[in-house]
Amino acid sequence: MSDTVKASSVTLDILERIAFSSGAYGVTEIARFAGVAKSAAHKHLMTLVQHGFVVQDPLTQRYRLGPKAWLLSRNAPDLDDIATVAEPIMIEARNALGLAVVLSIPIPESAFVLTALPSTHSIEIGVRTGSQLSLHASAQGKIFLAFGDELQRRAIDLLPMPKITRSTQTDREALRREIAQVVRDGYASAPEQSLLGVNALAGPVFNYQQRLIAAVGLIGSVQHIEHPPKAELVSALLGLSRKLSAAFGCDIPPHLPRRDKDET
Image (tube, rainbow, N blue to C red; front, side):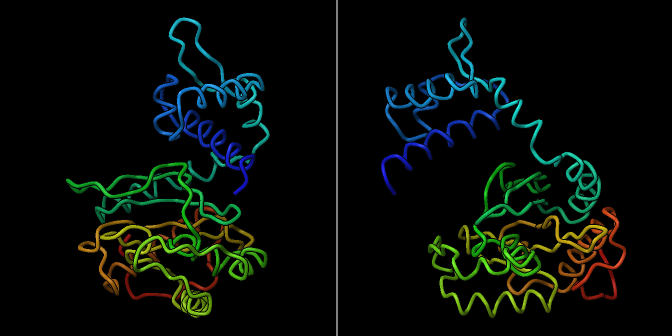
């Protein structure tokens, strides 16, 4: 990675952290999470301030989102509708299963977490809204590789496949075989492939055009989501996929096998 690309990446990381924060940040905090010196963090912040993406409170000296970020958000695709429609159904599933429930949308080279509900267990396992999940090492990423448009399906040919844990799949041909199985089964799993001790199941969400618009995932410890997963949990996930797809106008989702019982 060139110095210019690395600097741009740090600037965007800082902007993303401020954007998904509930409050404002000081330069010391920003330097700490960005992994750079305070002087470097200040330079990145000044770039964002000069372009209007971030503003500094003159009283507290802390940084928050600026007007340019708001203008960009107005021109972005309306994702509120997806989250608003999906959330009541996700809450119902979370309360029934006790597992974290996550909804992601496809972006280049990753699955973007649009909304996430924590589990009901005393030890919480989940992902943060705004996170980006690797396509090859996450259940939701595999859903996009399996059911996405032609460009998404072909991404496997050029996809970076770093080894995140000892269980991460890094063999391209093996991943192709796994994706073919995902198409047949209607769901994907990623046991300990992004984080040791954690497993996830995911299913597709289609709209009225039978086009993939999102992936819904269940996340938990390997104690709660075994590998291979129990039939009743798979049934619950497929039921959740069908229910969400129906909410977006897809009464008969393609590629989703019918189960005798839907748990959600």
